[in-house]
Amino acid sequence: MRYGAYLGPALIVINLFFYLAFDLSKFSYWSLIGLMFLFSALPVVLGIYFCMKFFRDRDLSGFMTYGEGLRFGTTLMLFSGLFLAGYNLVFNNWIDTNYAGKVVEIITEKTVVYYE
Image: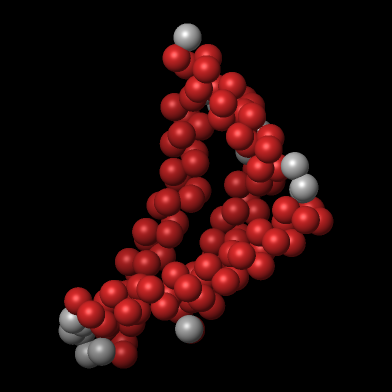
């Protein structure tokens, strides 16, 4: 739970930075795909890696079985996912209610332009 409480807020800060810092309509198709990967998948993968590494080294004396790693990774993503679910609930209902629709529209437009 402790590591999920670290990773969840970190992912929320990354999402807020992505929302505030970038105007998605100004990017090309491939740079938009790269930005989406950079701010969605990469932080999750790096967060899992570093949290598992710290857990293994600090709490398990440097050795972790596959089952322990699977259990830890699942629990980690469960608790960080709870943080992100709360953030998405607040963000989509009160902060910017049409952000998801705007992102889908921009990605669809960029995809159509790219394939033409």
